Length: 285
View 1 (cartoon, rainbow, N blue to C red):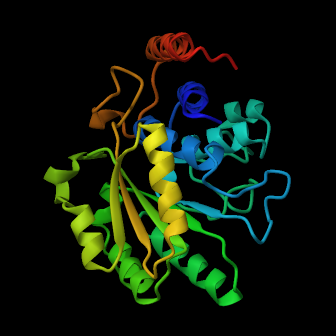
View 2 (cartoon, rainbow, N blue to C red):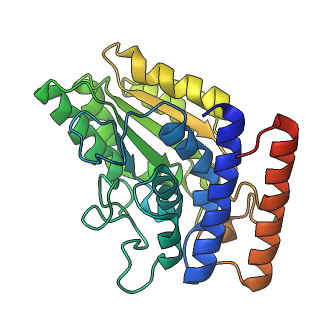
């Protein structure tokens, strides 16, 4: 897909995120909305090698949703990619659903790792990348971390290990939306400078506007192909609650479902935004 098509798809997935969380009555909209452009880029922008018809292909690239509470974003991407029917999105967090509040590797195709305990995702991704290297497999492992998650010490243990092992088949992406459940990350426990920290641990680093799809494709493709003996850390500057006016840059929407009126407003705003995208780009699809 080209960037205009990806922007339109990301908007549709934002509508899915709002709808499924509203239907469930619980969930994490803020961080799901902030990272969906990144997922659109990975799954549909030609960055990741993956095949929904063969989700266990040993040569596939792997994606680890380290910030597991943003499961609605991952589910929306997997559904639109064809890993399971989009109609199943409405079952989020319901009894017996495959779409649990955090991703479950044993339930849903396309989910590489069961995540949710913050700090563990990069360690798992590092182990996967190391295992692929030992197997002589050239696949890439992508891990998406929350910026608040980078306050966890285990993240930096994994960073130290990854650089020590020269895991240049690992790309860590930080969803830098600046907010966590208790407020601004800089006020709760300031993680800055993330780029400088990852560099100090031996990573290549880059910063990108996580809502600029064309720039994100370029950045992630570069990181995947570089293979210069170092892992990559991409700091993606994003907006928490992106696309919904009353959720944007509001820490209160970290883990709260919209009511009926709020859901209607959010979906209306997203629908209008989609119309503008289509009119501007001349894209229909």
